[in-house]
Image: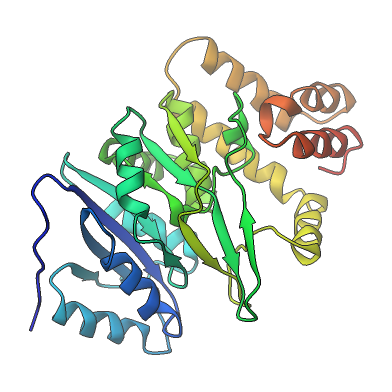
Length: 314
């Protein structure tokens, strides 16, 4: 029997887009933490991507018992976490009074996450994200801070936090869906959190990064991209840098931002940065390195990226 629970009048309405793939081991705890959110009227729209461990059937069975869960059919066009979230973004239509969150399949949300972030949205921003607490099966817990001061162009090089912390307005969801439909560069971006942030900031809409860690961010061997903590994470980032993946990723994001940017000085500046990213040679490299303070939030990261650009590794 499907069960629908009552919520207090006036509570913010939030739909959570849940992308899954072979996540049965941790999924029940994740879903429980979403449905237990306090002070909001929450629902889940889930889309499984060809799981072979029983995840898809578990979602169907859970939805049969809880009217707050809807499971979309897998049309076979997934293949990665980014593609699965892109399908959700394009297939879900939300009313104007409903905010949108995104969930991985293996984390644990703190009970006040959505209510706190809905109150920040009400202050006039289109997106909220936050710091997280990474944790391991061995019991190690580490604060992963994301709320360093935003920079003018940070959205071209980094996300404002894991996508599982995001809460966005319906107009930002719709604009992102349009961009995914119209822009090959948007479809080439490997992480939905980076894409959504670039769309919002490129459009000139406000974003808030909350220092409170709203999610316990599980670290395990199946993470698509972990918490960026520790030596192993540093080695992986260096590999991506040396292969110029991060530069290509930034190029895609800059083109996405240009796609949505209104006419004005900001658009002209994005075009200049795109030229620096795509023009070979020392002159472009040195000019781009001088922009490092505008491209990353954390001072240490500004210095590192400036050096890597200067010496031609990035």
